[in-house]
Length: 209
Image: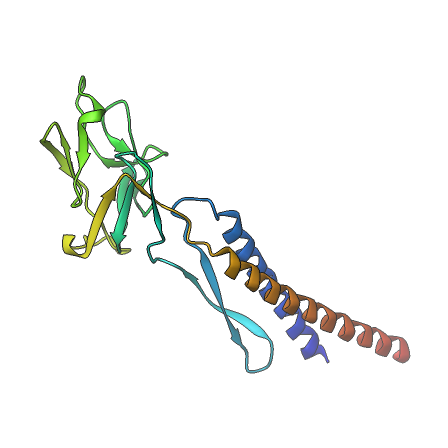
């Protein structure tokens, strides 16, 4: 009986985390570049369930035109490499800006490429090629590369950089609702099971007492 109580309580914790994951996915349905997480559940030999893995989707979602030269989509695998005082970081979020020094940075000031636009030059003359090359009035000003999760540079023939585009969130609302309903029912069933075991244990304690 105690095993049934522990199994039910563990299942409640697993399904609670699954609901939290679903809520987080739905909350980011309008967040550009957001990648949804999927929990893989595993049935345990002694009964109950556990979380075997958490998988983040890395496939390219659909894209929309933004009209901004410094909005990028990596059509293929890989991430941008950013630098700041805290070191190196990687991201697929391709929303960048020009700072006062003419560097290309993200919203947190992390640098993607330095010294792109010189003082007195117009940012309107900036253009970016599909290989990541930056030019101003036709003059080469640097190139951004794309890296894998281990920090290795990815060959140019394995991706294309698309300027003026945004990648939207990959959250599938219909799928998330279905997952939520299934998880909620499982959560309720295990809650009822735990309550039943608890009532039975209480009855036994009263009888013994």
